[in-house]
Length: 315
Image 1 (cartoon, rainbow, N blue to C red):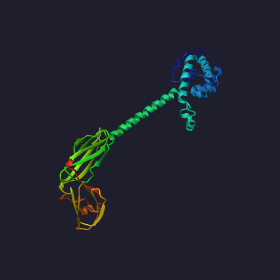
Image 2: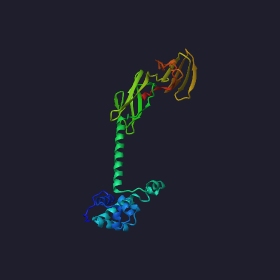
Image 3: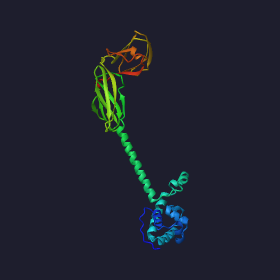
Image 4: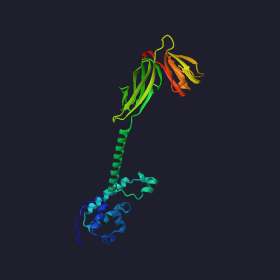
């Protein structure tokens, strides 16, 4: 039989050896007999399972025998074998995954070849690409965060301005009552909204770069300024039913009082009065002479509703 000289064109040595033998229509037994190589070693070479082969000096001898039988360049076979065994040894160093009992149990028969390494890297690239796409889609559909720290909803405030503070996403576009407000690198924002006596709505909205928007609406009560000669906060409460009221004035310990229908009570403070009521609909508030009516719905319980006096500097 006459053999042609062939060059290694397959991706791995094992694939090449298997391909040449099949093209020559030789069985493992025939090659083993002609080349003087154990069938087990020949199958290890063709499967890429180099770790089951004897020392390299013997393997290189096997490759020379096969090169003569197959009519190929022995040096090319030897060079390819050295490259692939070097890759396997680097990837399977004792300091790696096989140094653990878990690794030895599940990966002891693992054969790492250039083909399997390329497949792993390709799979990793696809997974990372899909993860990035999913994250982008999630970012597009996610609303920005928005947290308001001041003022408290339904707060009564004395003064010409109310301070609005909170946090949102650092990249968000924030507006307060339609006016753009600066957001710092930490996502914090702060601004003042003009206030006149009576109810006031404050709408805070945050939008991300994809147009997703979240908003919160706060309601505050603007009260007239008290005289600078006396207490700056005068709070009169009238009761139309039995009510349990808890009051804290200017940070002093809270006191709990019981009232009946028709009762009335006044409180004075320089800075704050905090009210909790067992029946908001039966608790009617007059702040600095301005009647604001019931604090809420009938039988609704409210806790820690603040009434503020703004400092002169903030007016």
